[in-house]
Length: 385
Image 1 (cartoon, one colour):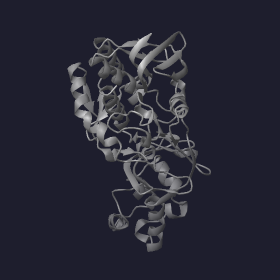
Image 2: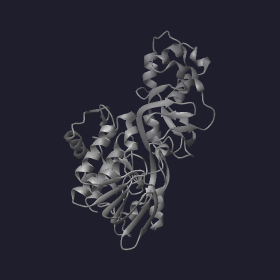
Image 3: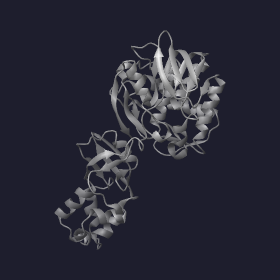
Image 4: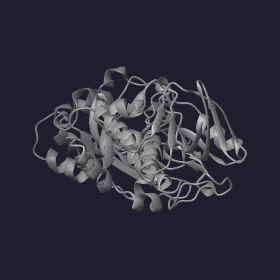
């Protein structure tokens, strides 16, 4: 079967690219190996899909070339996608920091994309795993149950995160097959495993903290797990963490040493009771030695306060690994931006070959940015194929 455009991957980027191309009158086929499209969309955001972020800027993305994402993001903005959501009368809300979620279900976003595909006469083939991709005059994609020819090929099959819903390295294999460079990949937006023994009593404790590494810091919750740390602040910093360097955690970001000593003046409380007003009791018991816990705050020396401050304000944590791709939100790294046009996402060396979404070396922060990259990069390609 002959098409103008073949798209491998029926996720956010693949479907959105198909919509744009179909609206331009192109004959488009989407090839998806899962039994249904949009599976990652469905499970995202706790089932409500954090579909964009109102405050999206190029600074919210990580790439070997930090300027690469600017063109696509300017072509299709967060406001543009919000208007599409509104057009389909999907109720949504801002959770925090510009993060927009469906009020009811993430499946509404998938249904919206399918309706738009139907309106654009896009053909969707599910349950078709790609067997081979070749190119002579045309691209030939052989998949289970189907073989198609197309003038243009768009690779939108994501990265390695969430293998339980079918993530594979297919996009990277196709890139390598055509001689394109790949930036080394690793799990992104993922919990970290502490190097050494952890205090099991802390599992489940969540604390508003400021977490720093690699010249970046994030102020959000930290969640203690049985193996290490998770929570939004840790997921964010995982993109900047390097194994040989510690991560600094400030468990009392609203207080400095002077604030603590001022609060302690005239208090007849033990240090344990004093700190438990600001931090979970289990954390205080784990972090502060019993000898200090049982001292009256009025009797603490300068050295005592320094010890407490170093532990709670400048906790140096060493991690040995991440929780891996199965727990990672997305994949860091991917097809090198040196290989692609930032305006169209087309390969500079292989005319007609495009890469969009997570498979590219552009990774957004936690909070809807990766979905916005999917929409923006797909729009850029869909207007160019």
